[in-house]
Length: 408
Image (cartoon, rainbow, N blue to C red; front, side, top):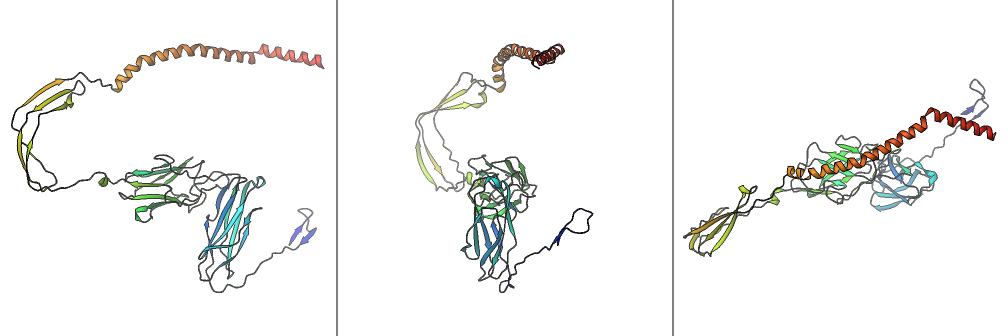
């Protein structure tokens, strides 16, 4: 009963109207006892950034669980102007309702949409709601385009890599709800999940403006394996109202990296050579070697000229490494010369070389800026003197009074 009174102290109502509620009753469900479930694309209570005038298309996805169970109706409340498609059945036990909408300027702010799916046994799903935040954009995770670019790391990394980060198109913070996960998949192991973090509360995930950082306390990587990253919708949220959420990322090529395998980078080949006998004839040659101990004061060049000799070499190997000794009969001549000193510039030398130029630049800058500073200071003090001088203030007041007497 709704009653209104003349004042708070009145005891007799001026009017009294009964309050009525209308209920729609469904027949008692028969057959399947498992109600349908709305499973996405967006999670329940999601906040979606929606620019004014944009074409909005969202899917309500429902799953059924019993043979012969179908979705026959949706009970919903929606913003003005939103259109709903017919119920679609793209695959077994999956049903879609497509929402289409172009928000207008007078719908600025949060606009809720809620729905419940009803099956052919009159079983209804739990209520599912999302909020369209009109006039705001959702943050997007920037797709990695280069090594150490918008997402880090990509490419080949070491097994102890423990810090990962990605960037977004706007400043973001921790999401307003839990159940928003970042997943790390092992592509070599059929996409199995090796790590996951709930961005709603996980301390390993931190938000610093446009950058989100994930820190592993222990790394789960396997040498030589390839990995990729996926994200639920809403792993990052904007800072306006309900916090517009990022879209889900399910593409396995969106952010990929692999773990460096040192065994692949350096290989060892074992060969076995049978016993051989060969005759080797050498020609006169000259070789030049560098004495590396003299690189800062000069380079010593040692030249060796070998005479023509003939020798017979017999070798037999059955191990990884083989050493062949060659005996040369004859005499060799050796000469040594030292080249001129190599000019090596150390950081201290570079500092000393630039010292005079820097000092000269400082002097010139001081000479130029001193008169400029003097002029600026003089002008500033003159301005202050003109503004706050009592005699000038009184003169201006008297002049203003004379003008007023003349005019009025």
